[in-house]
Length: 607
Image (cartoon, rainbow, N blue to C red; front, side):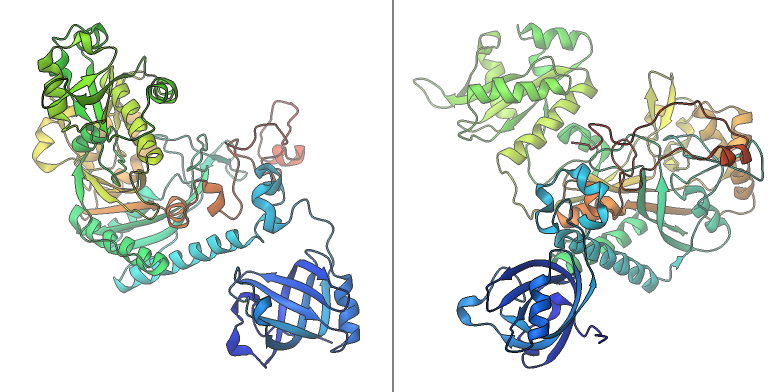
């Protein structure tokens, strides 16, 4: 008999008691008590308990005895309330059960390499090889549901503001200036290659030239770079662009969007407006441009103060043009000497530090006030010590940590130390949220290896109007109209006001050391478009995968993507990438170097 589902397993309750219901899903577990068989059935919405009683239906009971995990079944019966002592408080449907009168076995299953309810104890490589099984676990279903709901909120939000959702090409030309492109050979244009989009950047700007006015897209993007825990080679971003808008317009709109997402998904209110801090302040106080602002522990530069000390570790660095910076850690029991000179020093060394200087703040002997205790105190005068305590507003038992090196390394090490200490010392709660807009970015940064400037964001970002005159004479001092949105120490998006004048765009390309031929070859079509009346415009992109990571509390981006890649760019389930037939290569006029290729390599999963 054909049974048609009436409810999903997780959406039955006491309001359905006495009703006939039909549930369909996978057998999650079974328990044969002799006179009764209990089966937990699972689908995307949850788990429900089925009861097979021979007095209700002997045939259904006999089938129930034969069921095994992951078999697919459809069962019909009457809903009833469970006895009080049999209530299962671990699941939402734990107060009710279905007494089965008829059942269909839709499919039997082989013994799976793991059960969805213990998948998290299974090696990730095995789970990715069998991703279709991994997706059955409730946690993955929850994440996919949240991802769907976020996408719907985004679409409804933009629609209410008169944005149009427009798809941009997946096959375009390579414009190398950033991450490495994925190239796709063309059969019809022999010797020619498409590139998969790293982002829809040029196309969305061309939409503004085309008079679209307001565009958005949930876009697939590709970057041939090494994956990590929060980055994939194939990813999804929320992409938008709007004409006649400045930075404030874009930041205000997306502050409201993020507020709406967190309210509807998590039930949390994000205070608006979201704070803004400058790039310079972020680097100075937090050591990076994506600061975790859930806790203080601001960095302080003490270079000038300690430059006349007798501590050679500091003074030698200062003489070479380096800096000395530190942070003050509130007094905690675990801040022992063994902890400082063991795990903390080793951690700093892993980021390139040559040492970690420290002082413990203690009461002054025989008098009022505070001083510092350390094996290096002898190299500093009382004036140095008093000023350090004052600068950091240190209290009794606080710990002062210092790094001395070039500016970039010092900030990198202290930034990492700061985040580790904030986490280990419990300086913020599990539900803490700290959004911030980072503004006033430099337009360029100098690349020592290539001996040329790079765009700190991308080469289509507009310089600040008041500083344009310094582009040729002092390009490093010029700021851009760029901004990033940061949450809990992760950059989740970035945007800018774009260059809409073709001559200004050519100037920026030239400062990036692109030749006239390179500019014409790579961006000629774009410059031509700007000459036909491009409106002022700006936009933003938010990494949707990373956003879902923050909403669901996972630290692994593979958890929020249905079919992710490993850190080697492999899909273990389909064994892609894989060799192709010789005939396919011949059609494309391609040859490959013969070599063996294995897709089951130790260490394929990122740790």
